[in-house]
Amino acid sequence: MRNYEFTVILDQNDDKMAEGLKFVLATFEKNGVEITKQDDMGVKTLAYLINKQEKGHYVYFELSADPSKIAKISHEFQLSTLVLKFLFVNPEK
Image (cartoon, rainbow, N blue to C red; front, side, top):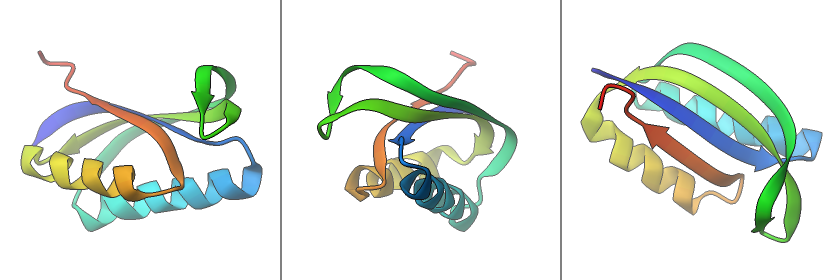
């Protein structure tokens, strides 16, 4: 298990944001990811339009996961319309 920092940008609409967060948490649980910290950073203006949206809801996580699962999780997030953007970072490198 490695430690990762993960930031996700979800839709600013409260209902879609809650649905997106539920999807992210369910995906983590399904893949055996252990969340050590979760921080709701709120709605922020995006540097550029994503899906014709000017603002997005940011959520930051610190987590432990098997490196082989990160690619699978990333693929699921890329296919989802609930996740606007996301980034996994390995802070140990």
